Image (tube, rainbow, N blue to C red; front, side, top):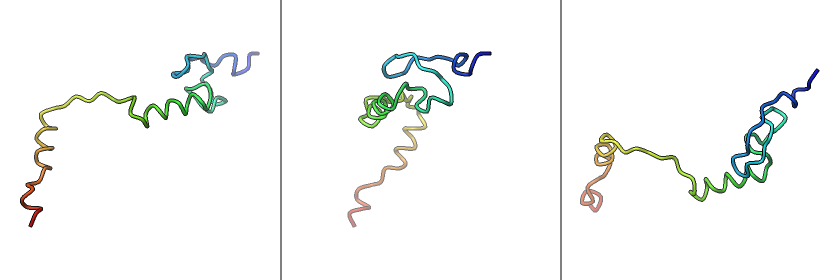
Length: 75
């Protein structure tokens, strides 16, 4: 009988590409270790990573509605 680690799926760590086990025993999954997890967090915090966003016509309409007239605030 094989244990759960033997049959667990192996994946590449997103940071260092080391093959690591995807299981509950790997508390850092999908990363291989805490170091790789923190490196990834740092990349997001420094805005090196970003999620692409498509701008739509609705975005333009709502952003223009949110802008206020500076003369109103200067009273």
